[in-house]
Image 1 (spheres, rainbow, N blue to C red):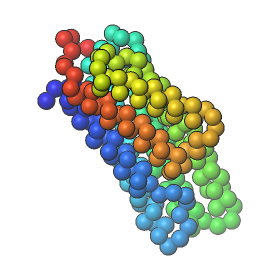
Image 2 (image 1 turned 60 degrees about the vertical axis):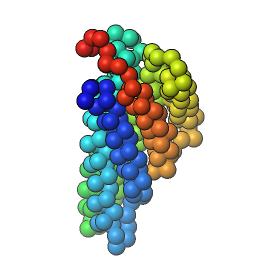
Image 3 (image 1 turned 30 degrees about the vertical axis):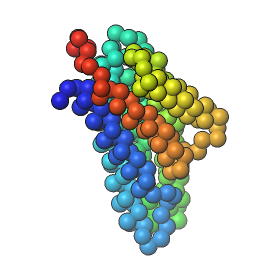
Image 4 (image 1 turned 90 degrees about the vertical axis):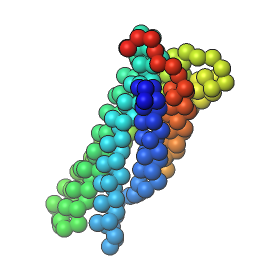
Length: 215
């Protein structure tokens, strides 16, 4: 299998996995008898999100290589995507590794210790939201740059470019407008929109011929 087709498969598999993550993602801080189950589910889904990030990044590397790293928009798109992948891993780490420990400790804590843990949990939420905001912005920029760099002509290429501009600019405008809340529902909508473009780009990558050079 060529690098292009392997990268396309990675993009599709990673996107489907992220859609599954958002579908199963718990919302809020658990306070009931099912707290341990909800915490475990949170650890699992965020662990999957962390594991998927390198897979999707490989797909984007294959895409940039296929378009050509000599093209500034293609190279820049990959680095925007790479930094977006790093920030989403940090956001998932906050929610999947840090928050569960704080919540578990809060369940048995009392008095000042509980107040301290509650404050730390609030700090974790602020960090998560900051990383998630950077992630959405970086991915939006990457999608627009890939749309600009796309070299082919034809119906599929036009669909990839038009959808890239709509998704990239649209999501970024939603973010900077201040009306996008990066909770389960808001982030889920972003993942669906950006994921749809990733799948479309994967189709375009799958049918592309390998580049003449290796970089």
